Length: 348
Image (cartoon, rainbow, N blue to C red; front, side, top):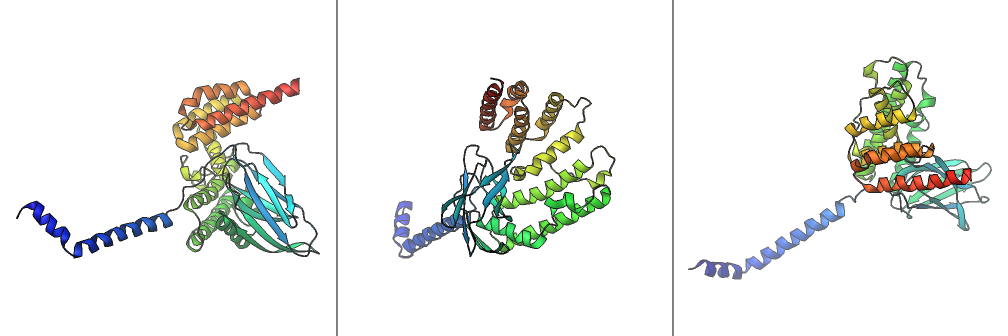
């Protein structure tokens, strides 16, 4: 019997269609399971988008003051945005954020930490409050970043004011070994809490990377900045990786990099021009990809805001071919154009 005849007989066997159907069903199931359980891509930098947060404030209270506070990584300036009442008990705050960032919402003077991503309009915060004296009874988060906001809520309840972000007030850095040990202890507790919440809370992978980086690089930055102009044992400092894509949304990552590079390559001439050329030359050997692009943008933006336009343009010309994404170069050039108009307006 020929090979073709054997193949025909095999395909006509009554079990074959069922086997093919079962295999196809299994294939579709695997694809569906993978699609459902695959984490979506993380957010990215976006210089021209907004984030809108809706607050619903319930309770036997007079209309409260509602506002938000945050700072962008690249601009670095802290901003306060007043909430706009859109209907009774409902307020909206529009943030001009250029990267995923923690922010703080205030109802009266009661603070709630949230997490913002560019373009998101889904975050709703339902607040129940009471008067005399004003206080918040409950907070419920809804939206894409609700789990992250709940994580911050639980973290605040767990640590109150004794955590890395309050470390300047919690420990005196004059006794450096004690200062370093205190920071290490706080960071270890916060990382253990993060690991616990990764199990019991649905935190996206990119946020877990961000939060871990934010804790570690802030600790490292606080140690390096406290060690300036003094001799400290090297083993008390944190030797963190300069290149870390998981830290790309952490402001403390870039503060740490600046201190790390300053310590790695000290210069006698502390003029902005000399420092920037030296620091960026070193950074070019340490960084690539988005960490490189954001660090260089952050550094050059600082020169623009200081009015040193020629220096900024010189640095852009020198390094623009090394940027992985040209959108950062476009952002800097746009800001240079705006700054020139501002300077012209002041002078004219």
